[in-house]
Length: 315
Length: 315
Image (tube, rainbow over all chains, first blue to last red; front, top):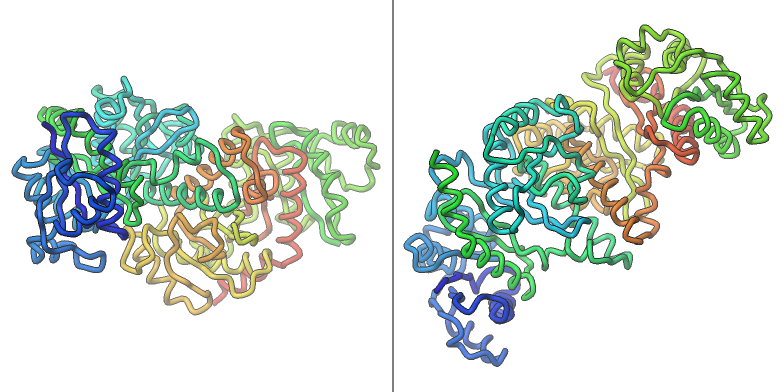
């Protein structure tokens, strides 16, 4: 039995959207998977009732507090010891659940990732990543997308390995092509950071490094399956894509490529390089987005991602 | 009489595309503007003949050499002293033309900008910028888009002033809103570079600084008219937008917003912070793109951009 921990109180429309999303996910998860909801039990049961879903389809861990978006993440994580996020991470750390997902406070999710679950030994800096659609139809992984905005080359190089393992284990891409986001194809191009990281990535025999990828090719799928960049650039790229998606949609433009860009289909942001699967959802998550986030978490658990990452950093 | 210098030998489809574009520009430029073509006179005349355009509509400065894309920019600029770009910059430096535009070697254009025309005194680093469309219908200016990939905060801060002057003088935007591209709206967000640049921009009373702008808002037009970033991020953002435009178009998506993203309509990349108007076109420029590039150059000349920039940096 796999246990997927889900914060029922996370996100702007919680608990309604979170619980509805969990109900939607029931049909899609494996028979041996079970969703564990953390939150206000009465409210969770009331949403399940309204949805006509028997409460025994879930495990419920009753909590009494909620970390709000305005709370100081680190302080609230400690002070609100009975919050859904703090209790969820407690369960994750002791193995009572196999992964944890929330659309709540990103800051608190990071505090839990770094201090309750902790980085894998050997990982300099954990990272947050995003799955992006490509015109080729297969997904690509972009990392980091906002956690580490001042990255040393060594950190970027590790992201190549972390991303490669994720792409292979979770996305099912054999021998994933790893590239570093840069301003030109040629090896000598770039800023000081990417030039140094390029060298390190090139010498890492554990990954299939294909060199630089320019911004124009991120979404083509032609060059790379894993795209490494620092959190400043990755965050900007991701937000730019979201912004263009919204503008395009508002103008009536729509096609399968752009729909795949819709955050509802993306499935949240995996935190990688830590000792358990953690996925962070968009604050404004709809039930559909929560469903995607839960499925991403399940995939990470089923792929034994943490074990694979640990093995890679043992050497 | 304003003289707009145009490299007839620049770009993948020169001289045909360059000369055709110049012919197309004739209708759009002011009566007192005149285009000066630099290049192989016989070939220029032959294209004009084929277009049914009298050669006396242009000044022609005959040159015998061409700096190729594969040439080393700095060496070729010197060695090929009768190349269209080198001769063009010679004319620009001595005031025989009032601006110069080329879709040829970007490297050679930068060599000419830095060594023949030279930076304006007080400008730490000249910049290349791009006009981007917004959903609001008015253009925004993004800078730097690839020249300075490792920017000190002081350089970014100057880009705010340079961009503000361009937006006001050339784009006709009154009191342009200047923002710094960042990963969050809040002042404390960002990497070390943007945090420091934010402080400098905030204290510059000559510009209307509105704070941070996130990637999602670059193309909305809601936050800023001038968006400052380092050349690595700007180049990535620009190429990403171009890539998404192409994917969208290949999938049959089209609307006025995306068409404005088409490089053919953008009008090239002004080099800013130097002692004369210089505009660099896309290497694969079509005649329509060349026309846009020439019109941008004319706008810079007519707006007295160089004088305004010089005045701003005199203090």
